[in-house]
Length: 131
View (cartoon, rainbow, N blue to C red):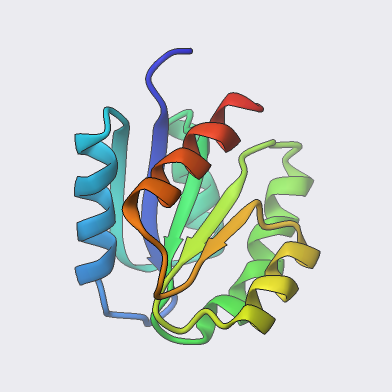
């Protein structure tokens, strides 16, 4: 498989980017190409960037509960554009109940505050290889 390309960013007004930066570096160090979009993204802008950058996975850092509000719109835009880009989310606020809700929406994987580096890396590799 070619080098995995992953977009990392945050939706809405979530300003807590320390985790996103740490995960971006971790994935880069694991050999992935990371496109970092930072804070204050919209679902439409995230999909547009993911499409333009030809990413294998979109990763969203979540440290406020806005992701539950934005996720249906993001997934609908992907569907409307017939794009098969898996979504993974991670962050300190993701509860087991939210993880189930995200999975039911169509999110490929979610990582709560106890996720370890190897788990994140291997899950993203697996998801990217299934595209």
